[in-house]
Amino acid sequence: MSAAVYYGPGSIINKKNYLSGIDDKERIILKLKACAVCGYDVRIFRSGHLKVTPPVILGHEICGEIRNDIASIVNGKEFCLKSGTRVAVSPIVPCLNCRYCDRSEYNLCLYLKEIGSSINGGFAEYIDIPPQLVKIGGLIPIPNSIDDDEAALLEPLACCLNCHINMGMRAYLKDTMAIIGDGPIGLLHLLLSKNAGMRTILVGKIPNRLDKAYSLGADLALLFNNEDGVDGKYDEDTLRRVLNYTDGYGADYVIIATSSPRAIEFALKIAAKNAKINIFAGMLGLHSANLDLNWLHYNQATITGSFSSTPNMLNKAVDLVSSGQIKLSEIISHHYPLADIKYALQATENFLGLRVIINKF
Ligand SMILES: [Zn+2]
Ligand SMILES: [Zn+2]
Image (cartoon, rainbow, N blue to C red; front, side, top):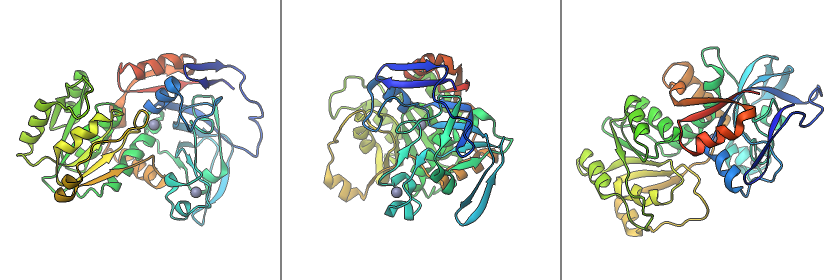
């Protein structure tokens, strides 16, 4: 099969005849229809990652087509997927033996493997699906109303939902959400936040993405100007505007959807009392934040994290998109064939648009 194989930082090589035995009837194989390029793929490509041992095929935002009929038992019920069915893939492959797996918190599994980082992913013509993924309902059939490209973005939408659920969003009428980060993920958070009925502020660094945020319903989209990287510094003007907009109270929910550790300093400045703050993005390298513990105590604030998602969230994502509440096509800007994977990674890395999709394999 054709595949784009990651061999280490800076090295992805397109192969025409990679791996064999794809006709083995015992294996669960999907034919790729679309695979989106995530910031995580770019980080691995540029700098490598502790979880990734090359050679491996990256790509975890996947829409694929079932190659051979699959029959299995999922949550005690018989489950059958016919060949030709299009599915979205939950990329966390759990051990099914640890405490978190018992609780269906597969994203927290002690021994999890990840499609597209620790095992082969979707930048290839076909993908092998481990049987335990089928057992937890990790292949989710896609209705015709969702096209291949949108189906690839159900995975990041599920991750955003995981974050919103973890923050315990209650969406009182006047609650305000602030999202730091104007990338595709920040914009997905914006779509979910507006769908939940919240006033939503988005803070970013790229002017045309802020325009996009307004077109998607943002109530306020602000440019964050501070580029000097000095610890503890933040953009005073942006801070003042967020506080003015919220009558001095600050935001009830703050999501950090950027890999810049400086965003946490800003998040704490714009958080209201009783705020929930979520560190959604993985940070570049090891970082600690200056945290005023008394601020946390007296403001009754909560700092949370969230990582990946579960099949349960992916199902919820399918419902939100098929019912027309969330329009994932808004987040897609570029398409490339697999042969041009390097351009696809560059387009993502250089912020040329929003999500980039590989759709010819
Ligand atoms: Zn991703
Ligand atoms: Zn486990």
